[in-house]
Structures are given as structure tokens and as C-alpha cells.
Amino acid sequence: MSGLPLPHDTNSPYTHALPVIEDDSGTPESAPEEVETVHDADWHRARQFSYDIATALPSHWLPLQEALGEVLAEDVTAPIPVPHYASSAMDGYAVAGPQPWTVVFPEPVETDPRKMLTIPPRELYRPVLNLEPGEATRIVTGGLVPAGARAVLRDEYAQLSEEGTVLTIAAHAPSAEDIPYGQNIRRTGEEVAAGDVILHADCLLNPAHIAFAAVSGHDMLPVRRRPRVTILLTGSEVVEDGIPEPGQVRDAFGPQLPTFVEMLGGSVDQLRRVEDTAKAMLSALTEAPSGMASVLDARTEVVITTGGTGHSDADHVRSALQELGAVFLLDGLAQRPGHPTFLARLPEDGPFVVGLPGNPLAAMTSIFTVAQPLLAKLHSDRPPATRTLPAAEDLPGQKVTALVPAYLRDGTVAPRDRVGANMLRGLAHADVIAVVPPGGVTAGQDVEVVPLPWR
Image 1 (spheres, one colour):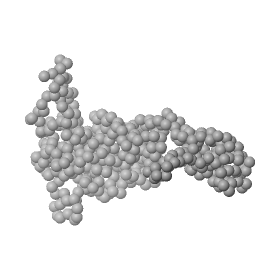
Image 2: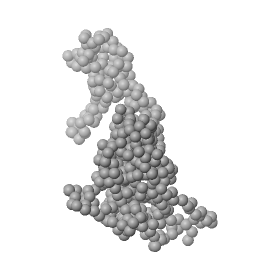
Image 3: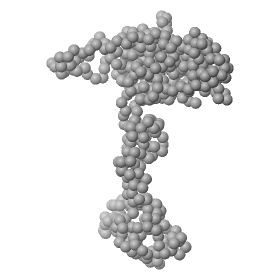
């Protein structure tokens, strides 16, 4: 029947949360545009390709307490003036007209003492909302200034009669004759007028921004949506704590990769460890662990895998993706370390899959090549920037671009040692990643560097 959702394909290894609606317009659907796989892309092309292939996600609204640290998606205006009422800047007396002033006291809301017991203490008395010339009333800092008041006389300069009913300016006041009009009164809208832009798009929201938005009357703010990321860690030889036995290695990704992804604009929804089998990887992509959504049903935008990206029988990430019909967009990078890195996408505009090598340095440098620009585009950020610095010494070239952890020295960049694909010591003490072209760089020549987000 036209317009009813079609049943899900029972042969599909995964399902979608949204129903498929039959198109009864009579116009056949166009076939999806084929994307040609880019093999062994050089570093610059891979970064640009990873940025261009994605589409920025729509913004969304978050409560103020959750918006801290996010990027504002659009200008925000004040719905009310700030302050939104005339208030006292001091404890003292609101006064109308010239002195002396007769003190006006708030009246009780109820004359029956028994009923007064049922009323909350703060609601026992009606506030004084209007003053006539020659009248004054007690007021506290932030209190509503009654209509007709011309100023607030602070407590230090207030002189009351013995009965407490007549107020004058004390003799030791700066001016015992009069009080300037508007003194100690915060005028309506003196900080912000209704409709003023209070926060500008693209600002990184800090505690002061959140506080300013709150006093301006906002409960939520529009922010750029972070792409949802699932991390799948492979490696049967990996242990998560303690001293590893011979043949075992410590987990270098689990303790830091989620935070690394957050630094780059992503939001990690799931972190799961997967056995080194094709069946386990297929299951990780299509089946949900207890109490969780599967990668596909959760509408994850990006999946990051570690290890198993090669072409041997021991590497299972590729075979699992191929069984799901994934399209490989980037297959291999012309860089060292990190050559086996790939970028794929599951069918029907499914999640992107960033396949990182298992060697720690190779994986982390490849994040800057593929994952960083991909996440930047999804997060509506500009392409990640690099800069150039003169080399402190000769940087020999390799057959392909070399990504070398380096440090800054007197305005120049120098390479760290111990920077093999499986090593982390050099990166742990680096300031930047030097992008060394195949021809190398001589001392004093400019070399491109990638800033590290934690430096």
C-alpha cells in the first residue's frame, strides 16, 4: 500500500532505527554516486580529502551546564534587559524627593496571627512598590527600587530618629545636604538592552559566557554538534593494567583515545574491546552489547578502529567492513608511520570508519592525517591549520612523507629521537609533528608542522 513503511531487509546484517517510506511519486531513485577509492594518498591530499568528504552536522541546543566548553553555533541575543528591573546597589534606604523622609514600612499580607503562621517567611509582608516625595523605605542590595525613588542612601550615611520613623542624611556623609539623583541605583538595561548580541557565533563557551547567558535569561544555547564516535580496540595480546608478560603489551589507546577525540571535536559514545577475529569485528559493528545500542542503531557518525588494518589473514577489520558493503574512500597513506591507515564508509550514508594501525605512534600520527580533518568538518570547524618553522637541523627525507615528533628550540623545530612506529617516547615530549617531505629539509629551511592540541 502506497505510503506505508516497507519491512526491513531480513538479509541485512544491520537495521535502521527509522522506517523506509515508499516513494509513490513515480520518479525512480537515482543510483548513488560511485566514489573512486584513493590509494596511497599523500599527506596533504589525504587531509583535504578527509575534510571534503564529510558534511557538517546541524547544530543543536544544550542546557547551560552542558554547553560549557562547546562552540556557539550562532549569535545569541538578550531576551530581556540586564538588569531587568531597577535595583539597589547598596543596603540602605530608597528615598523620594528631598529630606527629611518619612520611613514607610512593608505591610503584613494578613492580620490574623493564626493565618500568618501558614505563610512562608519571605511572603509575610507586601513590599513597598511606590514612594511619594518625602518618603523612604528600607532596601537591600539587589532589591527592587520602588517607583518614585530618586536614589538609595547607603546605611553608613543614614540617620534615623529615635522612633526610627524619620530619615535624614548623616552629618559625616560626603554631602549632608542632598543625595545625587540615581545614586546607588542600577538602572534597567544599563548592562544590556533587550535584543543586544551578548555572545557571538564561533566562540568557545567558557564559565563567564555561561554566567552571562544565565543572567540574560537563557536556559539553553545553540552549539555545534559534536560527531558521535565509537572506538573499537583490537588486539588479543593487549592488557589493560599491570605489568605485561612477555608476548603481551599494555593498552596505549584505551586510557587516552576518548579524550584525544574530544580534543578534536568528537564525542565518544562507546569504547569497546574486540577480539582479533572477523566474526568479532562484524559483531561489534552490528550487534549491541547488553544495555547499549549497536554502532549502527545508535546513529554513530564515526567509528575508529585500532589495529588489524593490513591485508594479511590476521587482519580482520577490512574483511568485516567488506562483508557489510563498506566503501573504502582512502586506502593507505603515503606517509611513515601510518601507511596502513584507511577511511571507509558503511552503506546508505552510514558511519565513517577510520582504520588506524596498531602501532601507537603510527595510529596517533594518522589521527592528524584523517580523523582530525574528518571530525573538524562534521563539527563545522575550519580545516585544521598548520604552520611553518625553520628546521634546527637537517631532516632527511624518506620515500614518502615522514611525520616526525619534534620540539621547539629558539624559534626553530628539531626532531625528537625514539620515534619508531611502535614508540611513544618522542611524541610524549614533543611540541609539534614535523611534516617532512620525501626530499627532506635542510637546516634553516622552513618545514610544515602540525600543532598538538594538548600543547
